[in-house]
Image 1: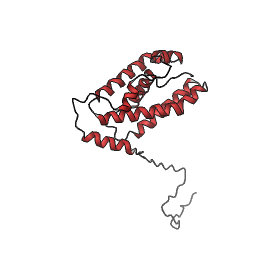
Image 2 (image 1 turned 60 degrees about the horizontal axis):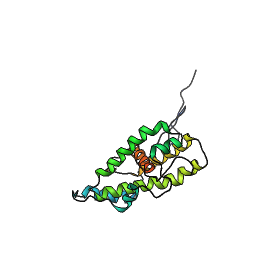
Image 3 (image 1 turned 90 degrees about the vertical axis):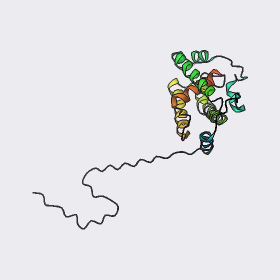
Image 4 (image 1 turned 30 degrees about the vertical axis):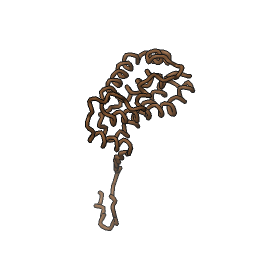
Length: 188
């Protein structure tokens, strides 16, 4: 009934002869390079811990201190005021873990610089990419999606990630910033 199809004269260069659907998948993994982080990771891996050095670098001190912002509410109050009271215990726990992680690196200036760089990035991205949605009274789901995107992007630029920070750790740093009066989840 069917005759055998002759395919011998088909001119195929780097292709395929397909009688049905063909699905080709290419996965490109591109590691975004952050030269500052790469340099700090190199320095951190070579750094000797100085036990007597108990002071934090200036940029990190800025985030450790409560901001001079007139909005001096604590983290729990900010979460309550932005209809996020369901996150209070979770956020407080993550904030405390973030603070302890920062304290743990007290003897490493390089680790402090890495934390300061990450806190700067979270603070800046939140201010530029999340706050406009909050000011516009957008839905919490939209705001949370924006926050999630920021944390994913920061996680991707961590490179070698010698501090072994997860996205959950980054969320803890975000709550740490909220608790120290640097960010808020409700309108100004």
